[in-house]
Image (cartoon, rainbow, N blue to C red; front, side, top):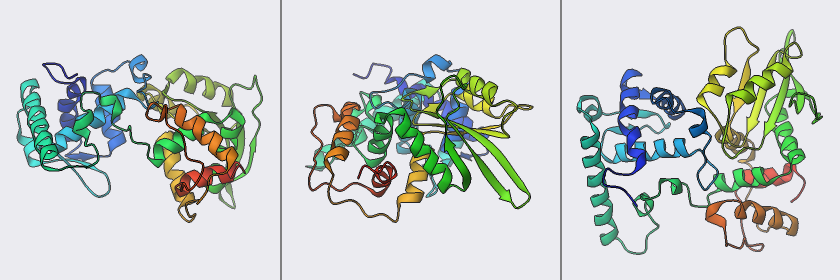
Length: 322
């Protein structure tokens, strides 16, 4: 239940607006989120905490804070997803009491809307007392990430191998050898006939945030063996991990988090039609994925007459399960 001072996520409202002001009035969500985390000095341990869906609790709370700032007219979003501070956001004198007043005003608006509209899907206000549930609906992104997290290590490695191939890498091989510093495979990125890069990659099925120590260990393993590294995860990366990945004088490491994985599947799977039927093995795997997420507990996954979105279909096509 929300406390007298409002829910915990309200602590991010003012920093979000301040960061946007410093960026010149706008910024991409990931950029703004990282800067807010840095500004508030959120420790790595807290960044690694997950909500019930397995996503980052801190990033989820920042998303809630931004949502209420939009409702209050302090922030707007372009069609490209850019966060943009409005004139009201640029000129308002923000303090805790001001934010709390805006929050309560938005809540009253939600209550009024619920009274006037019947039999509608729950709005964010229906779950405002629990910010962890911002993504509680079982959408395809949640389903895809839960499916990837439920795979055995070799299954996720095969998925990453295919995604790298589709992204232009050549000679992509999964090694998966223990005692090899966490290196799961290697490939070649041919830039042009004269320039190529050897790349080593690591696959991490995480529900939380990959810490900076994991990036340091991976860099140590690829030192002198490759021109570049890639870490792919179903989770997120802490801000310290992101800084370490691009540290000056060190072998660069590209970071691919859960959101980027979904984008890659979307780019590759948009031409596939939703499957009209779920096979027995696919149904079992999906049920395990649904069971692993809080919104799916106790829900039976339908094995008949169920259409899967193209990105999820592609996941199973890669694994030759469908």
